[in-house]
Image 1: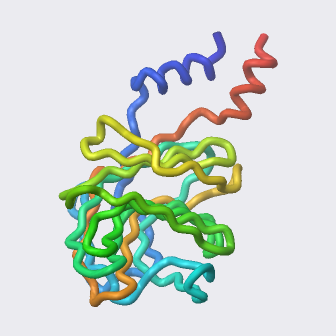
Image 2 (image 1 turned 180 degrees about the vertical axis):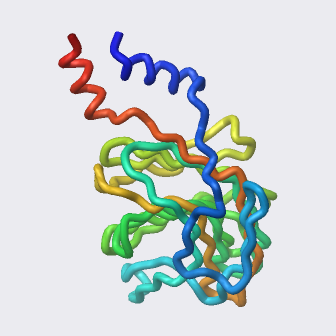
Length: 217
């Protein structure tokens, strides 16, 4: 058996540990006025009247909400636990995966019409938005993203055990991505958001793995 095959089996069996990101070594895009990290937790006061959106439906472009990230290449699985003191329409917090200002995915909880919604925005020059209303408020939620080739799968969970898919979206393959935590407050004067247990686990490269298997001695 090739080393790649053995490594793949260990990953699938859960015997290769996830890599906890050291929060102190991450970077800010649109740093908020107040924030802090404690161990594996990040809390922030979300910047008022800030968001990520491009052009479609509303006719404007904004790219000014807080985003705390690290950069990763290749294929990976990332997840984080999210909670927020949501107050007004469109208050939101979650995970963002971003190539640049025209290509990104943000997913998490968004407060709309007095309800908690699972929300995903996919942007390739213009933004689209999908939501799923929850039947009750939730104290926290887990978001997981799995990048494979030219696709990113987004999942949610209430307990970090049972995950359900929210979205499968195209994203350019074989280029570095900024991965991390964001929050936005388009209509309000800000709110408190917190994140914990942010991890990123690199996955075996699919194309290289296929080549190795095909050309194994």
